[in-house]
Image 1 (tube, rainbow, N blue to C red):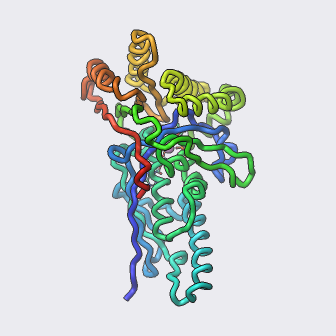
Image 2 (image 1 turned 30 degrees about the vertical axis):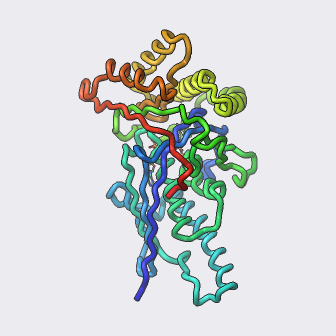
Image 3 (image 1 turned 90 degrees about the vertical axis):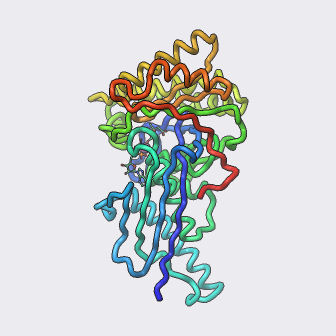
Length: 360
Ligand code: ADP
Ligand code: DP6
Ligand code: CO
């Protein structure tokens, strides 16, 4: 009887506070600047992926949210992840063959795969589905193949699926070091601090629209790289200093500085989108109204009590200290009651991802 091998795992999303936007190498997915993010709890936003390997499968197939991806063979990003994990599996099989004999090793690296992945939140809507999705693909493959490799090594593979995915291999506060080598071997994620480092910090996710964005992150950032002079200023003169300041604010748990940097970096990322020609608009009127409400709230408080950030989409992510979360939920719900103007608006408090439990 032919045995089918199967593994299931889940992965969290991460939302950047220093944004990645721009590649210096589009094939290897090497970024133009380093970035920092926070990995969320899997309670609310997660990708769940099941992978089967069998000698009976005639080709590799993938279903995303129940719909089959027709062009797996031409999808370079998926192929990058398969190639890199299969290479590691083959090395492992060769090593095992020497130790226990070739007949006792299952040649999983030669089998086609059937992959089923589901996101429990909107896909391609600016809530980092490519991050949790590709992190989950690579992590589940590593489990299926029983790869003896570190999260940092896996981050370099996930990066070749979607850049932001490399940071979802870790919980807590994570940086993606852009690296300087041409082969990308030093472009990897590292944990700055674990999820229990700053238990008072919480995140509020406001889903304004679950519609698929008009311009994918990949296309958007390439267009920005080609046409925006502001992006060059950001890469050369802004992000390097901000990386240091943001790391310090996290390590010192200095919310005021953390909030200021987070909001400024989100603003500059969206300014780069506007400086792209033709311009790209990810924020909508509701997003901008949230920015105004948070700004007014912070002004009245005399300190930063809430920090907004927006990825490549209209949905707001608000970081705040636990004690201020009820006040912020009240404020947001007062100005933006659910389903106002047919918008599917709701807010959803969620704790940070705990990396005490391993992924999977
Ligand atoms: P987002 O803001 O959601 O990250 P992107 O434009 O960066 O949007 O990427 C969306 C793409 O990521 C999807 O069209 C799909 O190709 C890929 N993706 C999303 N979720 C998954 C998943 N669970 N498994 C594999 N690929 C995924
Ligand atoms: C705005 O990682 O989705 O979310 O590498 O082309 O797949 P690709 O892009 P992606 O870009 C994320 C951009 C961002 C900021 C961030 O996550 O740092
Ligand atoms: Co993405």
